Amino acid sequence: MRNLYLACAAVALCACGSSSSAATSSSPSPSPSASEANIASVNACALVTQSEASSAAGKQLVNMTTLGAPTIPGACFYGAQGSSAGVFVYAQVYPDSATAHAVTAQEFQTALAAQLGKGATSGKEISGIGDKAFEFTGEGNAGNGVAIIVFKANVVFIIAVDPGGTTAVEKLATNAVGRLH
Image (cartoon, rainbow, N blue to C red):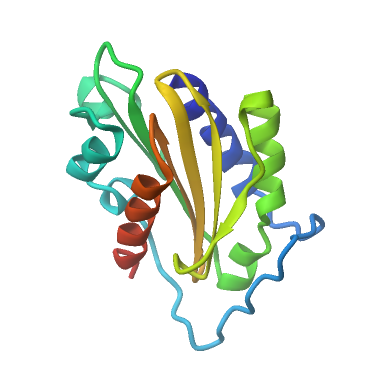
């Protein structure tokens, strides 16, 4: 889990912090809607609840700050003491949807591949979640992990589950999109 968490955190900080559109996307990005309202702020721990995280990982998890983990702005770590299973959520709010949508899946893929090496796979686009979403798999400490990157309005968020399957992470992402406002 630590490797998957560190990789996702590095990806979040590297890719989400970038607003460069120099990387090209293999599929066209939808044009942000001018009438779409900007989201002012996001609490990562409100996007995925402790109960949902536990269900997705198949183990009772807690917010790691309750066990003394540091608070990281924009991030939420669910885990269990003495266990490698966990769920990581990271959300970043951009000034507008055009800036958020300038971040590309390839930036995430490159950062994941650099962090996970042979354990990272190419991202695949997932339809029906947010404005666009991409899913990646990789090897985590608890087993095979799954990460999804979701773009919605002016927000980009990542949810990583270790161990986890695509169905569980997609359900978490769908619920999280519903909580953005």
